[in-house]
Length: 157
Image (tube, rainbow, N blue to C red; front, side):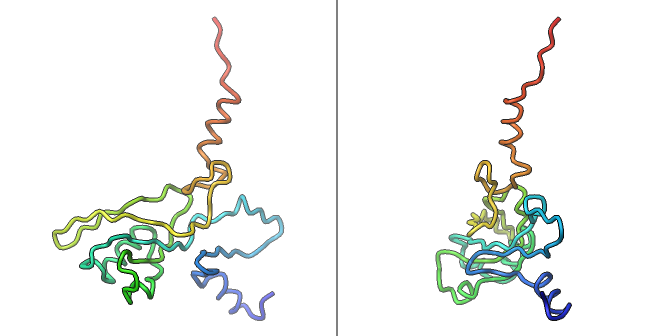
């Protein structure tokens, strides 16, 4: 229960919210709420950019990468402090019900660079095949197993 509508709106429309390093998805409960039917399509996820060339460590590049992934939500303080020189770290609003990109091409000032992407603590995995990139209700393994279990009838002539 919230004290005011402003408090409720702040929780459900604000964010991104994290518990430690894990992104949280918040949605109001209602009668008939079924988690497996109301799973989110997007989630805030920290993405490491391993071995990003130092000349590409700037806000414009982080914005381009984050927006290409679904929307930049933030840049790690440790990235600005260059606390870890082996990777930069951004938070992006990722579409998690479709395959995730393994890399991204950056084209800036005549330089074309392929940047590897390393996703941290993805919040959702398919419960059937335990892979990221789709939810249980759209698991391609379920569809192929269902086809094997119920093959189409043979036509006899």
